[in-house]
Length: 529
Image (tube, rainbow, N blue to C red; front, top):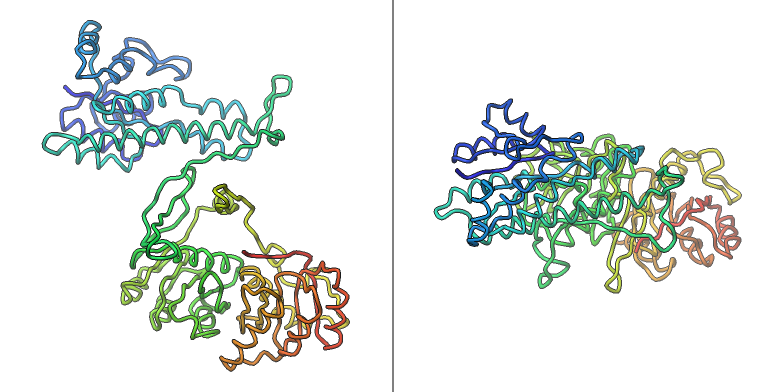
């Protein structure tokens, strides 16, 4: 009789898997909580203690670390000596090992976890069984991911049984699983230091900093930045990135960059907000009473550029928003959800990509959402994600932002300045943008000087016949000379927000005063490269 050993922390699907194996004639051997769960579901199960003739001990620390288990896993069926050893010691071979490990990573993510609790979540027997089974993959199927149970059952049903390629694939997955587990332990324990036998959290000592993580491929992409470049999407093993692909053509590398840029913008707004992205820059962004209203405002801010754009919303797509989206050509849209009744509307544009981005923020932002990484010279650059925290609450807030001009902003200008500042932070540098209180009017992105950025924005506004008189302007960094302020004032803006910090701040302020423009300083730069 073939034998399967099941010992899992994540019990998703384990009862169904065990029942299917039993129906195929497998004897099910199990431990602790897994054995109890199977027995409660009516699945015949043999305890590990019955196999080893030795009780589980030390609060479960020792249960599968026994020759009757590991010899059964490691025995090579093609080796006569291995077969004789099994017979001599009356050991039955084990043909399937389904194991996933103690929830160490989940425990380590608890902000106040005690050192002793963390140590108890270091699995010993589990990784040993996984590694043993993976080493002997020619004879043993090892499965560490509940999502693969169906694949295992399908392969077992094949004439001739599982292919060598499938066995090897599972083995590679298994070694990746234990490798990531060990890396997680290393990273978590490195955050502790010992003082008089007491272990407490501490910063990593100078020279010992390490950042270890494992990523898994989610899917291949349509192509990279260009069709001749291969690309794929990966995610950290310790968390889900929260993307669900609802409909449409395969995504490309640039689609995902634009979708992420759209999500970043609308995430900075509590009110319904929408952004339309081209090449990671907003060609339009707006707020509204409802999400459909916000989208239409954002689209119409630059309708020509919005054609074929990427849309980001911070509210689920309802029918009204879906109708507005499908009324023009949009490449892709990302939102925190899609109403059931909106899906048939979106499906009219069956090639349009629809992506739901809904990360689990029940314990705050996931770690991958608080950091950014990119390659450089074959190495890795890591930085904190930029946030426009200083604009979370309405302006002015006490003495912030600092009014440096003779004239203070009006109530309407304060609202527009805050809106402009939140959008400008997401525009590629050098950036100067013009807005009213609820939508962008003109965007000058990615220029070599601030004067150039103003010129691009003004040219765009004139081409669209959009008046800038009475608008607010935002600059993502300080004005090194007064010429940028002069250009903004000539364009018609009556209020400017900028970080300040230039040695020529006095010149920029003097220019604002000469033009009767209100100017406020945030003291915080928002370059985006």
